[in-house]
Image 1: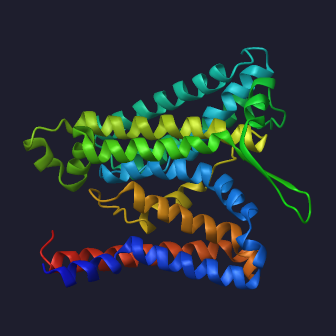
Image 2 (image 1 turned 90 degrees about the vertical axis):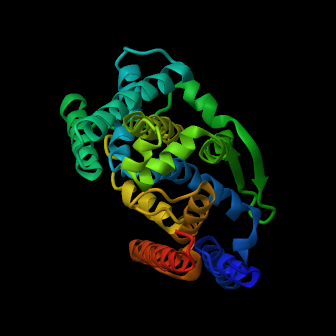
Length: 336
């Protein structure tokens, strides 16, 4: 492939098209509402993207491995609700380590369950994780009820109060804090990117996503890698759910339900193929940024809130079309 074709392919790649779309969106928003360019908007976007980014990176790892996980919202609800239920009923201690520790253990248990269903029992990942989602959601409500916890324990309130920076709007005097928990998705993205790019674990995940039989012949332990992907997704989703409770001052049995489609949309828009074997942290970050921009700034463009779901659907369709076109282009050029 000559240099001109390489440059053309790079400039019309899915990540670059996402960047073009985001630039256009930001320009239109800035024209309609100059306040869009203020630091407050950036801080709000950073806060809004914390949960979406963490969930998307978890889902991306599973998709790369050739699977899909739609159970993480239900697992997250269990993981954030049980520790709060225990504390409010005198069965836990007021400690950040207790809350996050219990949440992570719950995520580990459900991750192992998903691994067993997919890797050992060979159930289709969608069916297996749908079953896990139903078991987690239904079991939580059946056993613990539907009480809502809106008061944070002192230890989580202390965590909530720690900020990296606080911007004060000179016009209104309103303060916009950026929580220290923003560092979690940043660190997560860096670590996962390094693992996928430079380790045998990362190569193995791509390999089993591309062709399990070929990966097995090449010496990769397919079952172990599948277990790793699902456990990682469930554990990180559980920790993210506790961050959600901390920042939103709320813990309910259904708080995260329905988030799976938005997260999968962000992954697909970012270049992940649902057939497995393709995807990157950089692309997923761009997908999350686009979804977050669309979800949180339609009001600035004068678009009614009721149109948000429609807009996200268009973004998902855009991502699917772009991924398909890009795959066919690369195949024609002999890259696949």
